[in-house]
Image (cartoon, rainbow, N blue to C red; front, side, top):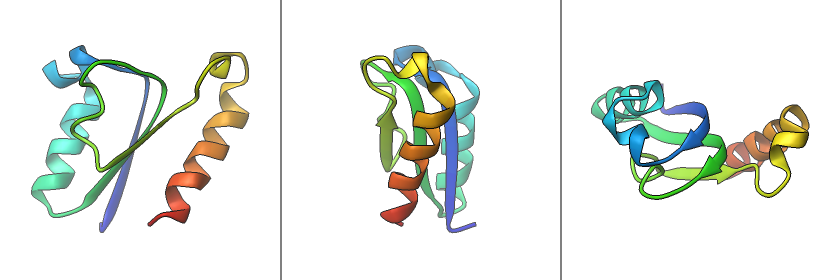
Length: 79
């Protein structure tokens, strides 16, 4: 795949320590793919494994499905 996407409720410093999105990002990068992520919240260094990250923002967890679709479309438009 040329592009791989991952999602997580919160990308943070713990993400780097072995949450599934970190595994996906490392494997995809090793295969030469661009790596994108959508998260409910992004904090600390959690997004550094990804080429592009979008968070749902304030109130995002109140309407996660709608905002995840919007943010995923934003990421896809930049591919």
